[in-house]
Length: 292
Image (tube, rainbow, N blue to C red; front, side):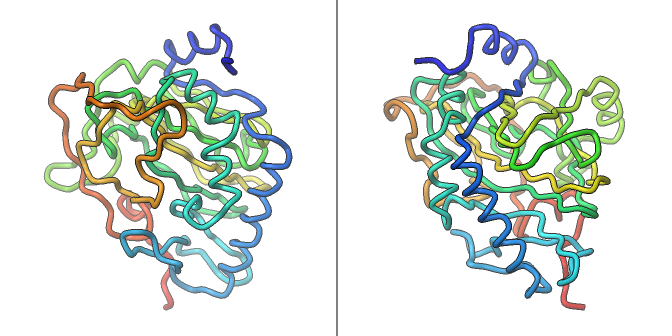
């Protein structure tokens, strides 16, 4: 049975995003938050990004330059579903996954996941971009599900989105020959002028079309802002570029069945330059913590 109403599905198709409550059970949310607390505590003992390494050998945990043992700035956990039963369970078996199937199903495939974490005092921000420009596929039936691990409000660096931008162009993330991972400043200014914030209590999810332009500011509040971000595709959407964050579970069918064919709907697609550092924040000019 469908989890989303037809009105919610229509809103998603019109706006390119939908914020829905109760995407996970209270027990699932508690398990996710307990893992976060343990990882933040573990990061206090490290001065640079650390492991266990990802599939492609990069550090799994990344911190901002402001990180210290006294005030951690853990900002990214790459593919937590590879190392945590709690995160794997939510990726596979949650109302969040069912919601995605309502939008692009019935046959749904997992691509990758990550946690973007803004602890209090964190300087991390996300410059405007579209996810499709990082992960181009043969079609754009792709949903980024951003699960709220904390209550998100106007103070702690909420996601902001430009409604309807998924129906427009896929913007370049290059400045000349340099891959910046963000749209041009003039484009960002135009998108920001029509953007809206995504607020909600922990356990809510923002379901976002892969071509929707979005970003976020630093956390200026007194509470953390964490997002568990899972990327799902229709089973017949085939990648046109290497996964920027390879996972042990990449390509796993989480709803329905595998596709025998690839569905082609895209024209000319700009290929990204995949990050070799611990996270894409460095691509956008935000260095990782160092031992200096």
